[in-house]
Every structure is written in C-alpha cells, then in structure tokens.
Image (cartoon, rainbow, N blue to C red):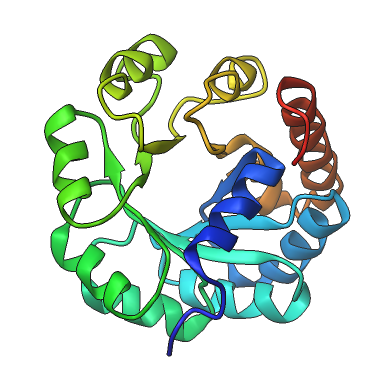
Length: 220
C-alpha cells in the first residue's frame, strides 16, 4: 500500500500548521475522541508513536473518526513496522534516528519519511539517501535552537522538524528559524489527558498550539 499524498504535500501540511502532535496512546478506546479533539482544535496532523501495543489499532480508529487528519507513525525502527503502519493508515513515517533500511523502504514505496538526526554525519547520511526533510531529535537535550543553528548552517537545502522538549514556551524560537518546517510536541495530547478522557483539554491545547505557531510564523 502506498501513501496517497506526495512528500511535498505532507511537508506543506506540517509547515502550514507549524506544529505536529506527537502522541503515545496506551488505550485504543481513546483514539476516536482524540482524533475528533485535534480536528475540532484546528490541528489536522498527528504522529502516533509505535511505542505501545495498540498504536496501529489507534491509527486505524483515528483515521475513521477524523478523515481530515493527516496521520503518521512515529518511533518506526524497522521496515516491518513501517509496512504495518502504512497498512493501518499512516501517511508518513517518522524515525528517532537514521536507519537506511527504513528510509529506503519508504522511499521505494513513495511513503514520506522523516528520519531523526542530531549530528552533521547523520545529516550527510540522510542527504546521501536522498532525504532533505529531517527530524532534529532530541532537540532540547542536544542544545536546542543554538545547536540546530550550528549544525544546519552548512546544509542550506535541508529542513528540520525539531522534536523533544519543545512546548508552548519555546516553540516560537524554533519556528523563527527559516529552515524549520514545524515542531513536534507531546504536550498537546498528554498521557494524563488521554487516560482521563479529557478531550476538551486536547482540543484547547491543539487550538493554542496552532495560534502560537501562527503568531510565530503566519500560516502559509
């Protein structure tokens, strides 16, 4: 099964909203409410991490509950996981690091893939594989905006999705950088809110995130 949206379109969606919820779901029964809350909050993209046994089922349920959401799978470590995620309805793949096998699998099937990097060596490996849109991870732990500015300077054709330790208080600093596509953030749909079924909070946090991104960089 191939992705039905080309890479530039997925990237444009991320750039439009400026923020991508990074979500770990422990109970698939929360998926439909979560999907609707994101959609109602005006944030129409999300990355569901493959860190739990119900992640694939959650992607399937979210896709049905909110067809307007652009859903992807995160924490993809193997080709088999990438295949399972796409079959479940993921339209893009995100990895914590650079795995050439995963990247090649995705590119060979026209599945948008965003591998994680945090060093110049990894950036060059990604470039060699034909990928120029990369996840910068873990962003804050690696030195934040200053580090991203430094390592990206020699690579003018590369764009980044910083993820890890980003929240409403520091997101604008990243979005101010011209080579940043969007920021990944887990605060929008926290484990506590999902466990409590507090979808009103998710809806509010999604709307706040989009508004903050718009203030930092007007929506395209």
